Length: 439
Image 1 (cartoon, rainbow, N blue to C red):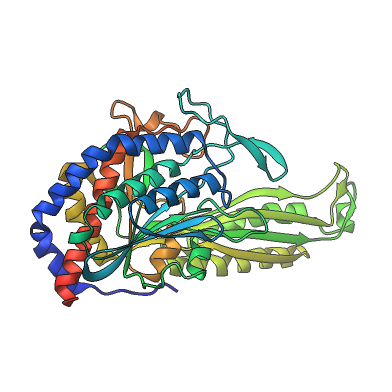
Image 2 (cartoon, rainbow, N blue to C red):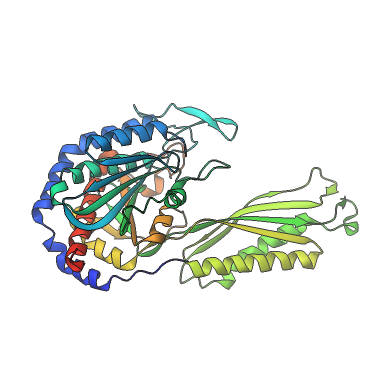
């Protein structure tokens, strides 16, 4: 169950203090980012050319750790297998701000014609596959490395502590392994010192460079895995009355599941999806099999609706099975929670986004049924997660190759905005929290 956070005093203070965040610090950020931009782009291209899969980000982690140490930041490695955590303590007391970037690539063979295109191959689930940063995590790592350099240069002015979290396995740990944000939390990444707030970003291939998208509350969906096993009675395909057909039962269950979203949920409140992606059963045309297995995914943007979906799936599937004389077993595994942006923190962050990117470049976006394991972090402390434009301005968003595909492309001229935004959000939170609490 999501913890609730109330920041009314801080929210009021944040609005009052947008213009009180020291102008010299803002100018320092701009100056540092201008100097660093080429370096950030070079890091991103290096990571793109040398991608690594989840829980195997060994070289990536080495490069990150080396850079953080060069800045005088305390570094912990081997967190959740390959994660890196850097701790920057400012010279003034204040809150602990966590900034997170994910490091893993995907088993995708790149088709983009770039001088730094990935040629890496490896084994994944017993198959030889290409490896590609087909979701932009290479940009996230480079942006956070740049943010670390900016904030480290301002250590004397920092009112608090920054915890830089370079996370492995956002795309999911390999079979039989733990990983990602959930494992980092289990290993204490938010402790010693305890984190007060967490920020993260995601590059987006269909949002123009220079633009930022955000949404309060449920921004990205929860993800649950679904397995339905239907046990009938095997018989000859010519004499179906002598058995119980699990294939026909499966077909009826698929149709029944589609009524959950359309008839049982208050869809004007938040969207949801129930998808069956695979049905398996039978060996030949004239044998009605004994068993059929269905697997699928459940997406929701509201935790109450998520639980309602679970309940209705069990009721619909088992009752349809019983009416057919079959036995139905439903297994639901929770993977990622809803990516939830704390409303007060989002409202306090919005003026900083607008000040950094320009008011006309910041957009309230609709919720997305994709998922992010940043959600685990934002379930523990107030979190704010936003989308950064990575599309060349002249392109049509409708024609852009989507994430997780071989033709995925990011214009890295937008990375500097990511660095500036994370740095300014950190400084703003420290300023408002320190003044509001007297730390």
